[in-house]
Image 1 (tube, rainbow, N blue to C red):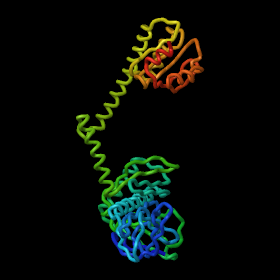
Image 2: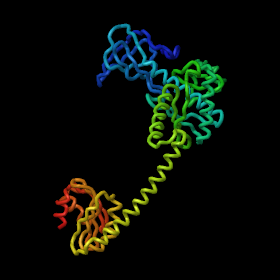
Image 3: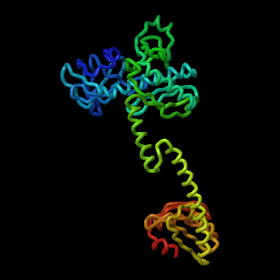
Image 4: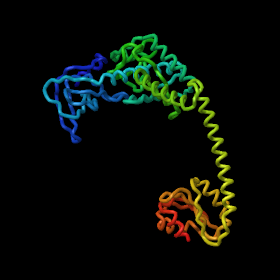
Length: 380
């Protein structure tokens, strides 16, 4: 079995190890086994560490039957090698994972919530609890969690004996009886967990609950902490700053300004819709009476606006009314008739004019990739 240095010291950045095997796999990567490792494997919902074994890049780490397998881009040569972990990434995960423990410990104490799912990837942090929580409740949890950060509480880990484990009160998603590793955050949480954590809560930095939604009868929570939370804050601040500049509004009131813009835009859309409807009625009145087909180009009309025009103008046309919007090679169409089944003609029309579409016997809609001249010639 591999000696697991990450259990002894989560802050190891570099270490020396003996190479037990380096086997090339079918995909060209190499499965490297060491006598000991500080690379944390993918486990407990957390993605694995990355780094280097000698000059070979470690892209994934998995544990199988107590043996830790390092998947590398090239073979590892030599009996002894220097190993280097991408520690900035490791530390960010330590910040986020410890923060998740604090949040779940507080939710468990306040609302009886049990953690039923967890994912800590290279970018996002998501966990699920089995109770439905509100934004107000989550805000309270976040405030208490950050209070735990300010208090700089100790974070400790240990493997209790089977006799000790029966007397302990701790959170766990699994009913474990042996080889249980307990992570204890003084005054806030005690939980079975295999991952590396920070030694003091002050190392976590800011804890942020970004979003949440109902999920399988409980709540799915999106969170970040530490360096990841800082980057997220900078990105969101940049967005707000840009919106503030575009609206000429102070950042403190930019949300109200955007809300007013949305209302104004919706009113403008409704006014445009009514104006287009009136325009369609006027165009229909001006359309000459005809017993044959008619092709009408209507600029930048949408398909619903083409339908409005067709409904208003169809009484003027004895054959098929072809309402078009767009330009050569990219036309939207609505074809309607009171005297023939246009759906039965759709296949023939589309084949002749590089079109796609269909609909009801009295009206079809779709697109043409032909020119206006070709369309007019066809229907003439």
